[in-house]
Image (cartoon, rainbow, N blue to C red):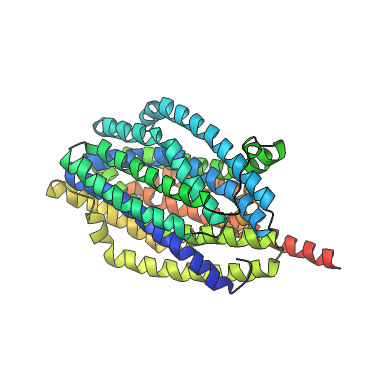
Length: 447
């Protein structure tokens, strides 16, 4: 990442990530489609009722993994192999402890939180089963995310792609067997997901163990005070940022639950497509974090500036293409998830299509959010992304509580857009302030 054309590097690094995310979203979509078509709108609504609580925990898992990998990419860019290996050893120990804590707390809290969220009684049992099994797999999901983050920090975005492609195929096959053949219902779908994640973790572990520059000693697994503080200083704010975002989503879901099972089902159908809309943004984000982190380690600020300009244009063009696709194919896409009586299908479809078009129209804002949040993390700043998460929280809740009172249930669709806009404004402004300060500091050091 420290030499060559920035646009080409960022794009070529992001493509495998994008393809991997496509397959990851594919099995999420297939999960939902199989549950929605085979088990009906009530099962679909149960998955929707569990979505944000699931993201609350999994977002923290991903936040720690992504935050810890920032220091790895910086040490790799600086050609500091000792620091790289120490950071990997410390990461393994920290995530083991974090996984156990998350597992215990999530299992204890799942039912009370679902009750607080006004989860409809008709879908409570299904949501509870879904979350209990998913949370039991936290150590597996954490292992995959950390191992994939290590590979990406070292510039390997292809191995996580291969892992996710094979895991996606495995998940789809297991979905069909567990749900349709064995009739395990929602439990079958989530068991298939956890088993697929286990395969992906083992695949990435094998790749990490074959990287020559990774040579771990026993002493590295006993983190020094400095290393623990450094890693937690990067990882904890990202995890807290995701947690704050998820809590805002839980509040929105609590409002959505008031409108009944059919509204929840339609809302869920579009939320399951949210990941597809966001695929390229997430992929470009990982690429930008690695690019900025490695070039910062090498003290190549001018390359960072050029790379960010390229990344911004790539992201804007990509979001425009996806927006057009969503408007043209939206009804067909959400129709994959919804089944039931004609009246149930019609109502849920209207909710899903309207919500999808609202999100698609403002997709460029989401893409800028990812690009500049990732750039700041590459610079070692995870506090501002956390602050942007607080802004998302405030905007999402304010709109979710105020707009429905003014314009009815349609107001809830704009909570997500307001959250994107508020966070993006903070991130873009702070990025330019921080980057310009770095350039001024570099200029002074050369005088």
